[in-house]
Image (tube, rainbow, N blue to C red; front, side):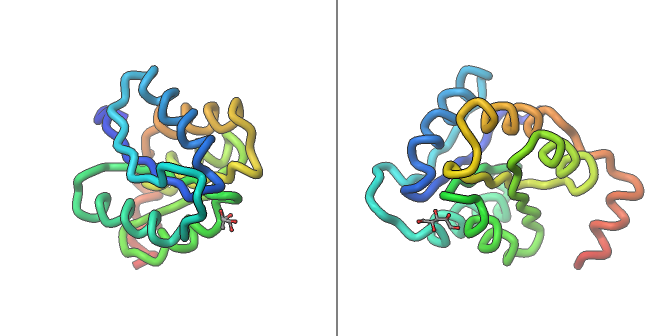
Length: 144
Ligand code: RB5
């Protein structure tokens, strides 16, 4: 990412991993905006997902990361919004191709699915891979 500014959010299930990913991104010199949650108290993931995607839609941020138990609830909610391309990734290859071919702008993963080390690798490849455009842009245009 040329723009080293990113937004991150989680529910209670993703809270611990979110803190680790936030520190990791800051080590990589990203400016990280954390929209919560801020404790392990139970919180509803759609509230967090909606707040994060709204800031992407408003062009306050180019891309964001959402973490819940599985990544699934966050991605279902985020993908309800036009121009949001959220992906659940549990492997680095999906993370890479979600950028190259799908221009994903929201990365979701599950704290109950991936460990810290894999989550960092997934984030690293996702933030460092650019969209290929061309025929892939044509296909994205067909979605809407
Ligand atoms: C919370 O228990 C859990 O349902 C949530 O974090 C997420 O995995 C939903 O998809």
